Image 1: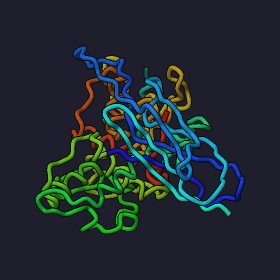
Image 2: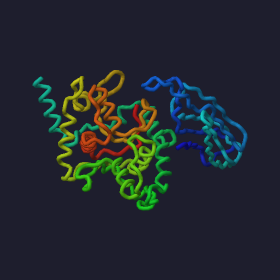
Image 3: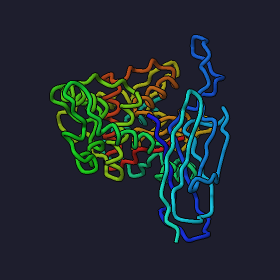
Image 4: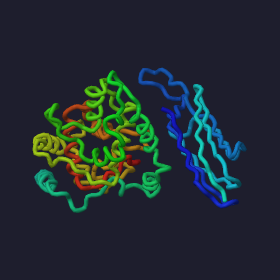
Length: 106
Length: 252
């Protein structure tokens, strides 16, 4: 049930600033809540989001318990060359999802 | 008191023809929330639609059949389907919701256990099916066999209930556009279900929303799949007939 969404423009001019949009299905359980019977609900969050462009890291974010479920992150980068933009979400309980998209730069 | 009673009777009669100023909950939302619903890359409901697209092709149950094995491409076979639910089901002898229809298919055709209400799988499949009707007009309640259920649903909508002694109609017919705490009261047209509600941080069905409202007026919420909720859903969809489906909608 864990899939991410990564949206990258399919083509861009060299040197242009492009927008990368990402979203993923995740409960982002804070670890501070309790059930109706008082038992603590363990923390289950995404800890880190890393975006690479042809293997080079272009964006990284550390997420914390105050971030809402299904985190939606949008960030810019510069279109340098054709290739692959990949994003990886890692978190508690061994959570790790990677999505990638191709970009053509001319 | 007499004026209130007259007002209710007037609303019941007026509901027979679609009110001229019907508005989707979309129009009461902030610009930002509307933009979130409209942008396919930002609408969180699409996360469930994508899950549903995957589930559509997964073979399940003793029959070893996927939805796609009978229904083919949902893009064509499911187009407009969600806009027609709740619909009359002969086996059931009354209206069933789109969720019940999906479960009926699972149990009888796929020979798989029914999915629980609000489970990730059922929401995903419902969202995927409903997505195929986006932009199409709601077409519910024309079937004469639904007349009785529709009347019961209408009566429920106008019936005061709960410790606050409120009827749905009081807020959604008489006071829409005004504020309830910080929120604008919408007209209660279920155009975007299943809906991603920011308050829930999750996708949810119309029945979840109705149960929310019932709890809000301190009434005992009808259980999921109960005849009352289905009748209410039927009445609300009929009341919204002709309005375009927005599924998956985003609501505050």
